Image 1 (tube, rainbow, N blue to C red):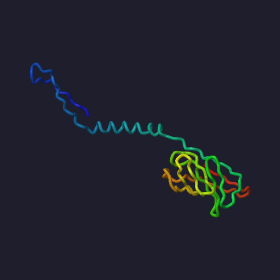
Image 2 (spheres, rainbow, N blue to C red):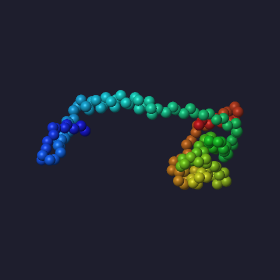
Image 3 (spheres, rainbow, N blue to C red):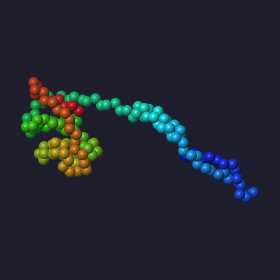
Image 4 (tube, one colour):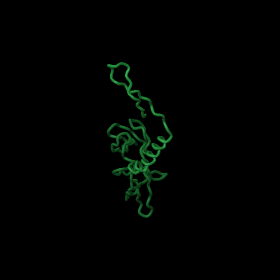
Amino acid sequence: MYFLLQPETRKHPLMPPVKKIHPLPRTPRRFFLWLGLLALCYPILRFLGYKVPKQPRLIEVKTTLSPGTFFLGPDFILFENAQGPWAVSRRCTHLGCKINYREKEGFMECPCHQSRFTPQGEVIHGPAKNPLPHFKVEKIDNTGGYIVTI
């Protein structure tokens, strides 16, 4: 807020001078100047905040899976059942630790805080609240492998 200073006034001859302060009235001109400044800054802020989209990685798995089996990759776990193949991330949604699949028990477990997930990536229990991300899987018919898009 801007203020307009009035001439000095004294209430007593020995007192220091006091300036009266009155607020300046708000004008539409000043409002439109600020609005114009914001409009000029918008493209600059958009440019500074731009993030380059991540390129998808294609990973070829040359193993043939029978229904009920799995393949443990470095960034994903690939499963196959009668409905088809699917892949889930090995990064825990709680703190990003690498998840292990416990085949005998039939679930995935995070070694850091023991969050547990179903093979479909849903949370069973633990500090993790979000399910594991799924990756796109394509089955290669002629060679019997898979292509996982991360």
